[in-house]
Image (spheres, one colour):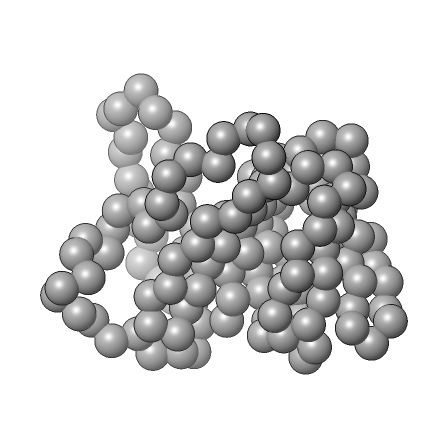
Length: 134
């Protein structure tokens, strides 16, 4: 059983934390700087489809915004998909498989790997989400 953690946010900015535990080891490197800060560079803005990412050891995370109809190519490992906004995505596998992915904001879904696939925003609003590769 994991110990319960309570974090109190006394700032005016909302704070959310997602903890993803993987079986990959990550070596501590004191030159990497603070491990507790926001590792995503910059803001995504709201005009164009864009992605920002970071890699820490064997872990890669990608924060993405897709305009309606835009698509993102995703590599073959397993991924955790965290919806930052309501999502209506279409997942098309390299093997020809098709799947609709609908999540409300803050929901999480495991996307099994095995082969590369594409995610297309089939909604009418920009889709914002985080993909954590493991």
